[in-house]
Amino acid sequence: MALSLTDPQKTNEYNEILRGLAWAHYHQKDYRKAIDFFNQSLEFIDPSAHDTFKNVLFGIGWANMNLSCFNEAIGAFNKVPAHNNSKETQKELTSVINLATIGKKVGQLNDTYLSTWRWQVNSSTPLTEFELPEIIEIEPTLNCNLRCIMCHVSYQNLEKEVLDVKFVKRLKGLEGKWVILGANFEPAIHPHFVDMARALTDLGMNLELITNGTLFTQEKSNQLKDCNFRSIINSFDGIRKETYESIRRNANYDQAIERILYFKNNIKNKDAYFSINNTLMKRNIDELIETVDFWEQHGFDHLGLILMALRDTNEMLTNESLESLKPYTFQRIEEAGRHLIERNYRITLSSSAFGRPSCGLATEYPSNLLGSCVKSGNPRARTPFNPRTYFQNGEFPGMPVGCRSPFKSCRILWNGDVEMCYKFIIGNIYQKDLVDIWYGETARKYRQMVMRSADLCHACEYYNSCIKGGEVDYDKTDSFRDEKLRNFYSKPTRLEAFHDYNIVAYKDCFYGLPTRAGEIDLYLDDSTKIKGVVTADSLDALKEKLEDHHISNVPHLFRTMGSYNITRFKGRYYALPQCLGEVNWKREKEIVQMKGVFVDHSLEMLRTKISARDPQESAS
Image 1 (tube, rainbow, N blue to C red):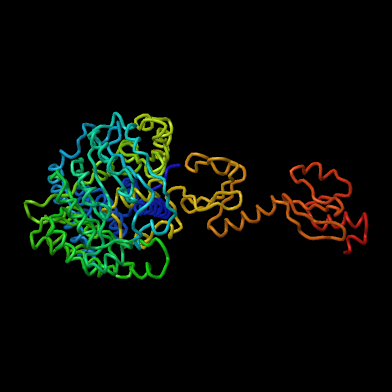
Image 2: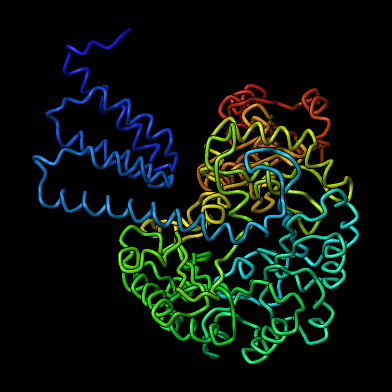
């Protein structure tokens, strides 16, 4: 039924619904749908309702800003009526228009700087077309030689098994693609890491290495110097010896510096891009200027700053969180960026803090701010090229969010499993060539599933923290917490075995999956239709349910009643004459037929049956 515009009450109610849907999609980062609902809302707004009109236009403007559609954003902000605006509103309006104008200029600069890295792409396939994967992440181990206080490695079960180097033979047809060695664990701990890097180089792969750098002895560095490393990222937190060693447990500061610098200076590819990743916390936040100076002096290209996310609730880690010091943290990060620009350093600096609307550098040095990256005017400064971002962050036909990952990237795990979207196992490299797995039926099913719903993507930790890593909103508490502490799991995660169940957490639900049911895929299988699956909204509640279920499915001596043993089994009570001795519960039907045995769902009814046979037994 068409809505009558002559009914003001219904019109207002409908408009409130549209605006509510628009802001809901906005906060879920589904900006295109948000804009659609905002535009629909405009049709039903009374022109005299200035506040509502302003609210919707600001929503359209900010949504376009997040999509980097700066012309559209400026257009929306300029439509906000100038009359009847308070001084605060007019000030805000001027500010956002200036930000959008700066964003437009920065976007043009980004395109210019990115064009200098086009040679790195090494692909003729358009970003919006599906062919072979452009990026292959390889996680050769599930272990590390360090136990850094903030790292997931310190809080999870590890494995000694490593990826067999022979897997490289399964990469035929993918010559020249990008390979990222390591990401979540230390790749150099692999006993045949040198052989792996050499074999990938022989395939013509472009290698990016993510490492803590502590295992690169002179011998190992000499063996690796001819490999095709295009990007090397060393994780190094703080710059003072006592700080570094207190964070990166098991590491030796002097030895780590020596090995990192030797590897850098010895590598034959002088175009290789060297970066440092520095996780920020209370104990190293005041070392930022020193950190920038140190790596600049040693010729590094880039320093990436990452705010620590809590992975455990222990007191030491909680005390290191910068969540309570956000204004001070952002101030120190901006000071480091300003320091770099004003001294015309060669090194570049990145942090999500630079992308905040209130970042002072955006107005002070707009031409030096490239999204979340700060770059001086030094002609030798090199803008970082991130293959993950280039290939995966953006629109793809049919995708509900700005992500191309299912069509551009995959990951090979330490056990040979091939993973897509950091979630879905689509095959095993020991069993099939990667090309066959990539185009296989399992991969196709998962791609179709992702394209049907944005929910999977919005719940994806990889999408939010890596692909969209430069857009992390540190005004949100969740940005300072690992998903485990938020009781939210972006992919099905096995927590433990409990009786005859595997406890698996997915999103905000906990599942008890019966082991007898075999492998259950919570993405593709409807758990409500699988017999024996138990769910709860907390781990404790699930265990309580499973405990009750376990007790009812295992013969449990409930009590004695005279010469009877009362046993509970599968929700019923059995009165077994003690003279029968031990019975075989696998032959339950035979037990029911035994002389003198009574069965009932109610303990009181069972007592009545016993009493009818012998009143003295029931009384006892």
